[in-house]
Image 1 (cartoon, rainbow over the protein chains, first blue to last red):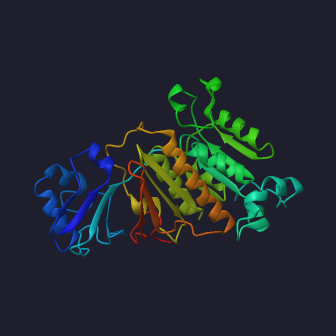
Image 2 (cartoon, each protein chain N blue to C red):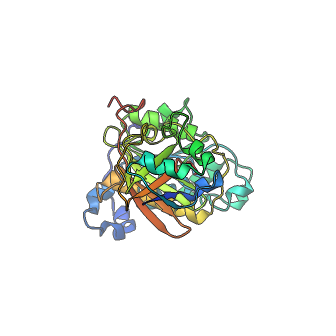
Image 3 (cartoon, chains in turn yellow, green):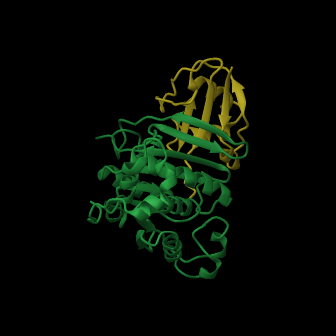
Length: 89
Length: 253
């Protein structure tokens, strides 16, 4: 199962502990995570399921190419890293 | 173009002050000369921008444009290391300029008592060879980004929240721009945020080093890499980022 890591600052807005979930694409893995956390789904993706524009997702350190369908492939030992924009100065 | 400044060579005083960094392989007098003749715009001299400005002044950048509005408040003093308690209630950018001049009397400073906005970004970016963005508001970052893309100026993007931070170096047409990475700001973002000065200081020093690398040509700037750190556990990640061909700001380049 792929590991899914959320940055700590996201936890100020929503419950999002590190977890693991099955799936062959980013969509499948995140859907599995969101299945028990609808608030998190609403924070990360929009009503169409596309990545919200202040969010970024990386698979094994690389920014996902497909922000709409989230079709980037995921291996069983992959890490999905979920972060949002920061602006503190 | 930046305000015209005649190209300057190193003098005996420069060679004495910068002796130890002249020893850095690949840098030498040519790198130092590039810094001496460079103009750098720093958007806000707060927790992040203060160490950026101080390190760039110390390293010998010839001209700094400091954009920072407002007067000094007690709550600035845990991190804004160019400020002084005795300056409370007075313009922050003046305090920053005074502190920098104390370190480097021959440093040329353009102190602008304004934060970056859509109204002044074009003029401010035009003054600089390179920009370091340390603003706390996304609106300022987006305004700066648009102008850096239009004027083809490199932009160091440094930001933080609590013990987390991120840093990347943007070059229009070669790397993503701010809008490629984050087309919109988080709705829940607040102007005030939790911060230790040690966190903003750490990432500010790294941002200054990125500026030195880009200006002098040494090392490998963080092009197409988002360096992200979490000082809770001192973990660092090098995340690969890419341009968005459909980006409304830089997609046409």
